[in-house]
Image 1: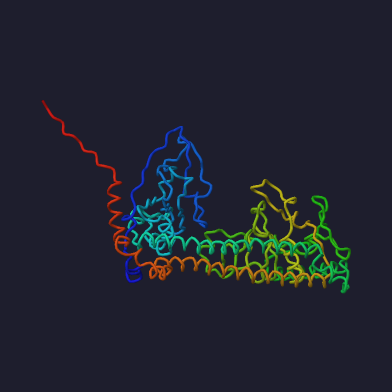
Image 2: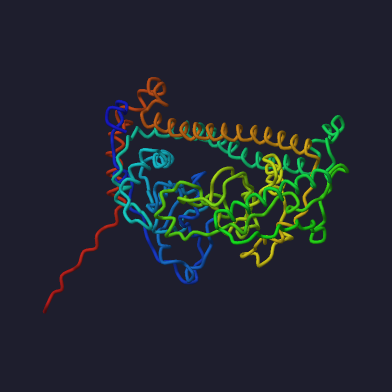
Amino acid sequence: MSEHNIPNGWIRAKISDISIKGLQRKPAVDERFTYVDIGSIDRSLKKISDPQVIAGGNAPSRARKVIESGNVLVSLTRPNLNAVALVDQKYHNQIASTGFEVIKPVLVDSRYIFTLVRSKEFVDQISGVVQGALYPAAKSSDVQNFEFPLPPLTEQKVIADKLDTLLAQVENTKARLERIPQILKRFRQSALAAAVSGRLTEEWRRIHSPLENTGQLLSRWEKTRYERFEEAQDKLLQSGKIKKFRKFKKPSNPDLDTAPPPDIPDSWKLVSVSQLAECLDHMRIPVKKDDRATAKGLYPYFGANGEVDKVDEYIFDGDFVLVTEDETFYGREKPIAYRYSGKCWVNNHAHILQAPTRLANDYLCYSLMHYNVIPWLSGTTGRAKLTQAALNSLPIGLPPENELNEIVHRVDQLFAHADCIEQQVKNALARVNNLAQSILAKAFRGELTEQWRKDNPELISGENSAQALMERIKVERAAMKPAKKTRQKRTTA
């Protein structure tokens, strides 16, 4: 907002030039009032949202600043988050936190100042002077010393009206875009539900026959797993890492008692996870955080929620499905299963599974991403755990292999489509956010009201000019200052 970027007739001013200092008071013990804390600000909507109604006796020590309708609140703590709001009538004469700078404009349109403190230049400048590492905060003087272009009062109102309309359109667009990720989340869950129940390939089954039944498929896969197991054991024996063969563990039967089994087509078979994939948990080794801190970071180190670090060695090399063992399960947003191919290290907070083929791993992962494992959890809600035994016994619908491959192909396509839309939404949101700042920048350069000034020269000159306005503000501010108390000299007899 440099000098050459403002129109003729505008002036530059500091916030301290056009506002007065607000009052502070300690609420009475039995007084009930609305308390506006920094957490009461909706940073997205830039509004006061769900403030507390409390009694003075329960009020925190920072509940001191009296706010009035038309005041502008600016959070001094972490100003880069831009927690700002315009106080409306329902919060008139209530109390806000001392963590705010309360701007009380004098003869200036409050909406103009409110849009000013939302601008990138204001946020960047105030954020650049913060102090403190744990709770970075600006000072009151940082806000008060901010310099900005001040138009004549009538033009301020025109600018504020235009910004109200334009920014509302931007916010509406942003709100619609922000709803799309949740729609895509539901779409993915619907795709998974259709996939693991057979609905996704219902038409496909009518024109395609299984190349082998699921019983034959399981026998073939179990033979493959046994051969793979013996080969791995032989390598370990030859390298001296083990002294004798470990016994091959037979798969568990599916647990059909803990919860009702899923409905599947007649050509499918209910199998346990351990019948579909081998659990390699016995090979997991945790690595201390201090040891990981000194690593160069050649290979991913996986935990319950995905990659948590990097390490210099690996214990697994192949194609895997990793499953959360002991993290948040109730109200969880992320899927409990994820895929990884290549060299890696896995700690004891994630189960590691390996099916006979890559597509079988994909199908297993998709099945577990949709699975409601809550009935199989042990422990308390806060410390819930999906044990290896419970995981191995989870019942899953297994289709014939050619249908399994078709399911994976279709889900991959649907997810790729959803991912593409999600990326487009992210790009659109970035453009919308930039658009809001572009509109604000144009407003403070006078570009939104360029034609208006040409059409209304009498409203921006003479006694209506910004300079004349500033003179009136000075007089008004002086009149609003409380008179200084004078101390009378004591007289002696």
